[in-house]
Length: 62
Image (tube, rainbow, N blue to C red; front, top):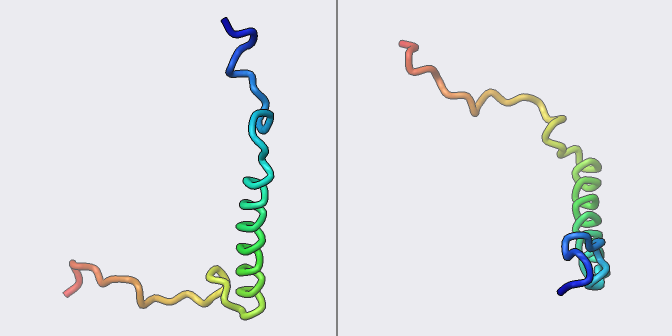
């Protein structure tokens, strides 16, 4: 029999989490660099003027 419950195991107590932490820190850093570059080049989608070209005409207009 097991001495303890297998469900009450703290995260990272069984396997070293350093590689996982490094992976997600790298992804976050790259994402922040991309966002800063877009901010510097004024390419943020939410700050661009509204473009009506993507709207379709209603099928009911004659």
